[in-house]
Length: 227
Image (cartoon, rainbow, N blue to C red):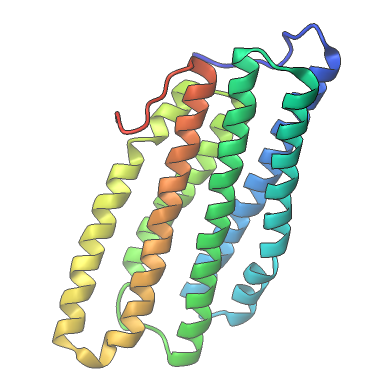
């Protein structure tokens, strides 16, 4: 099993700095896993209060992104990292960008939850949302677990799941569009579910991106667009 370890530098302070970066990413990832779960629950249960809690966390997520980016920049300036260490810093920087965008998608889901609670629940789409949502949450969790262990094989196992999510999303869209054509009165509420499904599908894309960065970090291989 190919993994990367952060205890092979002459400078103990460099090890400490790298571990601190890793810890910050995992903290951010854990917070976003909860955000996604809460946002989906808010949609399913028409819980506008829970949705509002998701929206209120956005400034915290944004601040974490800025702080981690600044830490990456300072680490490059102070330590003049070698090629493998520079990959680590660049992978962290790209991962934090994907995590912040996951937060953006969770916010979109929360906003749809508020609209659905105000306009009335959609007559269709919740089963598809739960199915795709469960798969995407599993992808995100496994991506963060692979990051925690710097495990390239585990990351590679997540990447193909995105294709299944994409197929399930396209199938759900076709079914919901057909339903709206049959019952035009449902269009507004079903559209909210469609926008929610799109946000969930995008979270899967970002989870896949994180896994691609892990493979790049551990193996030095850029697998984007190859799987």
